[in-house]
Length: 257
Image (tube, rainbow, N blue to C red; front, top):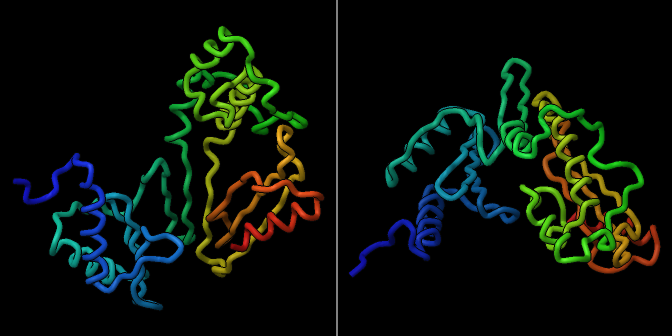
């Protein structure tokens, strides 16, 4: 008879999430409506935010005493390991400058292995991720079985293109250019300035009929906070816009949702 969930069982992750969720709520935290993995408690100087990723956590507050009390509350029920100030999480490296009150994030430790895997560490870097005027379509996909087999043998192609199911040489070349762009920009960071007013700014744009295969337009959006982006994405619109004006309004609507 199994009296409790074991690591590796199908339901183990769900049981764990229900358990930690219940405990955090008992400590006064409530999950965010926008992201249920983010828990919040208190306001002003007493505000505390807990970010949960499986069994890893980030705890943020204006005061160390608040953070310490949250750690103690969690430790009452679970055995925890305090790793100190966050430096690396989910492929993102975090740098702090307490004097200038800035926080920088980068993915150098994530991009360098990809660059090396594809043998691009000693090539000439690219200034842009894609050549101006390049339009990738399904017409560039390989037609013969031999060509398909050749392209599927390319390493790390899943990182490079949405044409994964049937990628062609043109798609691969475009992907390699992206890697060379990463080589050029691997030391570039996103830096948040704590001295700036924390006012959210939103930007949107659209490329009308950007998909040459089905004429769907492309949405682009970015949310800025403290002088740097916090949310950004580019997606195809679900329906075909009949004008550039319509495409722009659809992009704006998606941005403010």
